[in-house]
Every structure is written in C-alpha cells, then in structure tokens.
Length: 247
Image 1 (cartoon, rainbow, N blue to C red):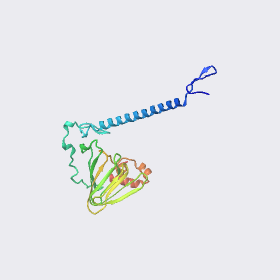
Image 2 (cartoon, rainbow, N blue to C red):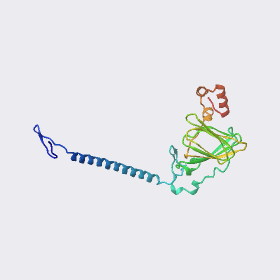
Image 3 (cartoon, rainbow, N blue to C red):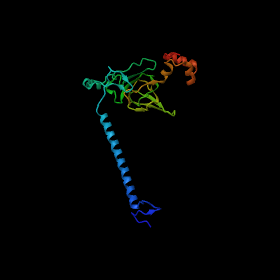
Image 4 (tube, helix red, strand yellow):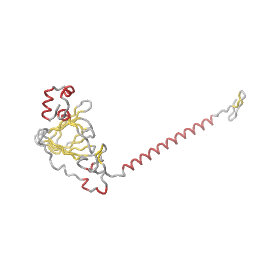
C-alpha cells in the first residue's frame, strides 16, 4: 500500500507518486494561470479599443482641401486654421436643376466634390428635380445606401434586389424610401406636376453608374451588347443613336 508523500523503491529505482491533493493543486494553479491570461487579453483588447476611439476623436472634421489631389479615401484635410463656418454651409440646392434633357430630370449633388464640409463624414445629399414625364433611369451607387424624401408631387420609385425581387411604390409628398447600397433603382415622376425630392447618402462620395448610359452612351461594342442583353442589333444601334454612344 502506498501512503501519501511516500516515495517507494521499485525495481531498484525511486518512483515519485503524486497524491490527489498534489494533483488538485497543480490543476487549480494551471486553471488560475489560464484565467489570468484571458483577463490580460481582455484588458489589452480594451486598451487598444480605447486608443482607437481616442485617435478617431482627435480630428473633429476634415474639410476638403481642393488644392490637394483626391484619392480613394477622399480629399485631404484643409488646415484647421483655414476652416471657416462657410465650409459647413452649402447653398447649391436652393435652385431647381435643368430638366431640359432627354430624361427630363436633374440631380444637383452636394457631395464632397461640391461641399467640402461633408468630406470624411460619411454623409452627403442631393436635390432631385423631375419634370412631368421625367425619369432617373436604373442606376446604382456602389459606395452608399440612399434615402429619398418627396417634397413635391408624386414619384414612382423602386429597386431590384440581388435575387431579382422588385420593390415598387408610388410616393406622395412627405413619404420617404430607402435604397440599399449597390442595388439597381430608379425614380419616375408619377404625377401631372413637376416633382421634387431630396436624397441623402451614407457616403460623402456615393458613386454613380447609370445602366442605360453604361450600355448605350459608351463605346461598348454592339455585338457584345446583343450577346449579353438579348436585344437585337437594330434596337441597340437606335439607343446608341439616341444617347450618343458608339461601337
């Protein structure tokens, strides 16, 4: 029989046995070590998070410096000593856009290129004017979601989800509609008077690609368009003629 803490001699060799008490002590110590390491990791993560938040809040704003190049991250910041209150005010949306064009519509943007105050803030706005019969063709904003509020008239609006579900609604004065980022969407004047809306974006530079213009106002070869859209060549050439495309 082996008694706790005894070290018997077996086959001429001394063998060390661990008692239950010693084993428990080792496991308990190991467990405490793991817990302490986890606590340290959590503390380190919190410190880095706080440092990140602190760094993000050092700069209150980044008014666009139009004398410097514009890059993927937006414009460089104007020196704070040169910033004035006028950098945070924009007057360009008080005048109706020119709707004397093929789509009978106009979009007046207040993006970072026009309104330096929104640079780096992740927001922007635009004015949308639709004459009677006016339409904003199917288009996408690769860099932002959009929310539209109708100020005057009626606007039929909608978007197509990635599973090809179409969401349509005729909006009245005061109604709002959201268009998720990157999805094809459109707006059409749905009444007998000019319509006015304002649209805001979740980016200072939401980007824009109009589907009809990409196909028929470009040099996209006609034979490739017919192959990828199932339109016949005569239709493609007619649309290119209307919108000024080539190829």
